[in-house]
Image (tube, rainbow, N blue to C red; front, side, top):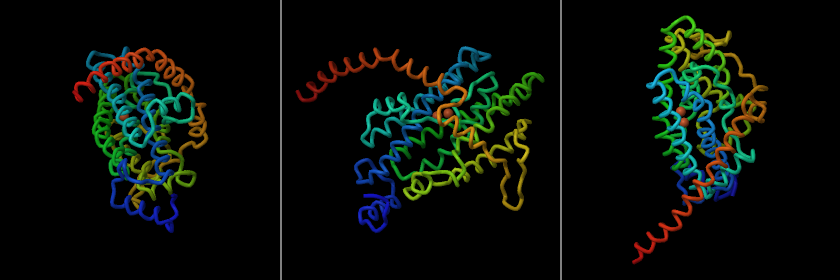
Length: 318
Ligand SMILES: [Fe+2]
Ligand SMILES: [Fe+2]
């Protein structure tokens, strides 16, 4: 069964998608299942790898309050990873297979997490811009065609909007501080603006998966539409903060009713996605190391489950 509309199974599936949502027990084309596994796994991996650039600042946060907030935020991202691995498992894959695929480089994570976090202001820029871009991408996914993914996204989006506000609040505080703090905030935004725009993927003309993904109701807007939405949302917030976005082509276009903006650097995006960004090797080495160091926890959990799971089963039967 594939996407051919003359195929009766494909036609039945198209009907199911439009009536929606598709649930795990429904018949679905192999390619739909594969597309979802790839996308949900990539999303889950991004949440988990995304804990690293911010996790590095937990011990260096400037106050107890900031430390508590950042810890809670990083912990939220772990939770997002878990919801998403669980959603992927409803498609018949095992979480350990997906984790292996990440470790072996067969699956990817978002390019944004391969940039270094050099100052405290980066925590503000990441919350404001990176979580802001994530929300823009993810709000439409709350209504995507696959039920378990859509439902996971509803909760994730609520938490992401908290993350975005905490980033804004960090920058707001810095922008009302000393000249050095304002300069630090501006420098963070200068470094994260373009990578944040790259989170929406390549321009539509070069996006390989968009058409099929839209036909199946997984993706509901194109990369360029979502990028535009993010720019339109963010420019007034930058003005409110007193920050300059590093794009000389950025200006309001009254005719279009949108902000015009410059193009992303597609070569840079391609390099980072191919594993040659500033921190790719470091992120993966850390991830593999943490996985190996945690092997005893997984073994202990499995042994506990084997022992007590069998006892529980007996109790239920008895
Ligand atoms: Fe998240
Ligand atoms: Fe987040």
